[in-house]
Length: 342
Image (tube, rainbow, N blue to C red):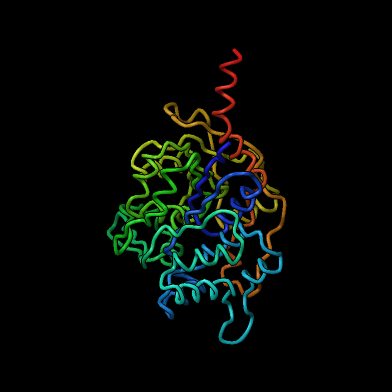
C-alpha cells in the first residue's frame, strides 16, 4: 500500500514540534519552511555571508533526523564565547553547505543525506527576500525583525503583506503540495512564520489546486500587538484570505487549560489564550477538532539564545498533535468502510 504524503508549512519551534511527532508514523513527510528570517544569528549570517537564513531549516532537519542524539545536539549547539558567540553549529554547517554547493536548496539536500533525515525539508524560496507589511496608516514594516517588534498590527491594522522583491516559490515546494494527501499549516508565529510562506508566488494556488485535506493547527496564545483578541475563527479567516479562498478543511484547537501560573505569566504580558465559541459563527465551512494538545514539559533554552526570554512556554505536545493529524488523515478511509458496512 502506498504511503500517504503529508506536507507541513511553517517555521521555527512550531515546525520542530510538529515534525518531531509526525516522523514516528509511516508516512512520506515533507516540511516546507519559511525563508525570510532576518533576526538573531540567522540574520547575522545572512548579512555577513550573503547566505539564505538557515535557522528554521536547521530546526526541521534536526526534528526529522534519525542520526544519533549527539549529532542532533551538535546541530543545535550554540557557541557561548568568542566571535561565534550566539551562533549555532547547525546554522554554520548549512551556510557552509550552501557556499560549497552553490545554492541553499542543494546544500539542504546534502544535509538531508548527512543527517539521515526521515523525509524532506524544502525551503519555500530559492532566493533572498524579505517581508513587507503596509499598515492602514501608510507605515511600512520591512523584515521579520521589524514586524516581530511592532505592536501596531493590532491597533492600526494590516493593509497589505508582500515579499520584496516579489519571489516565486521553489518548484519543489509546488510539486510537493500538489502531490500531498494532507497539508498541515502551523502552528507558529502567525505573521513571521506562517504568512511569509503564503506570500511566495504559487503557494496559495498550489494549495487550492491540491486534492489534499488542509488542516490548520491553531496557536495556543495570541501575540501582543499582533493578534490581540483573535479567536480560532479569526485565524482561519485570515489564513483563507491569503490562500485566496475557503480552503481550510479542519482546524485543531486545544481544549485543555494550561497551568494557572503559565496563564498568569502570559496575562501579565497581555498575551491571552486563543478563544473559541462554537456559536459565534454560523457559516463555518470547516470542521474543528478539539483535544488536549498541551505539553506538560518545561522548555529549556541555551543561555546564549538571545530570543529565549520571548519563546513560548505554553506549547503543543508533539505526540498528541500528531495523533490528531493522523486521525484526520485516515478519516476518509474509515468513512468509506463505514458506508460499505451500512
